[in-house]
Image (tube, rainbow, N blue to C red; front, top):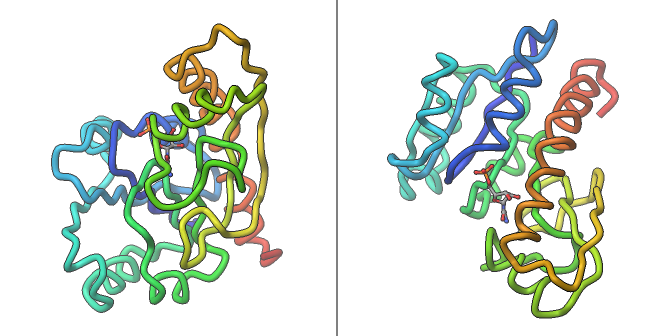
Length: 194
Ligand code: GAR
């Protein structure tokens, strides 16, 4: 069994889509949900599925030892960021090479970087009158949204789409592609392909 930890700061709709997709999977198991916010909606979703949760504060997160030990104790082999807003510290990137992936709600390299999350992204896409948008799944390195791209999905935008409409279109695509991307990356790790 390959154990997965999902890190999320918010509502956790992507986390739930992944949990549902991998429920009863032969080889992949969502073992742990980590959040930096004790009131994050994702924690209620985790409880609903009986998945262990861990709320982490900034000091613990950026201080190597304890957190790494907790991940090791849970035998985590893949970390999936799903709306997790803190930059991953270098020691964690090093401890999990090609083992941390993220979804970003825009077609990177456009609309990425510090401060570009959630509605800020969709507002910028709207302000620039983009004709398309869509999520990017990528590996995580020490910089925001700069790791190698695994996949992108696209949707057309119409002139009447408001930022909320763009957000909805992109989130719908996220729910379709992220669970599958997690499954493929998880399988590749199991099979020693990455
Ligand atoms: C998602 O749209 C995700 O792409 C975005 O946060 C949302 C989380 O929604 N992530 C970022 O903006 C990261 N830069 P969810 O909590 O419902 O899954």
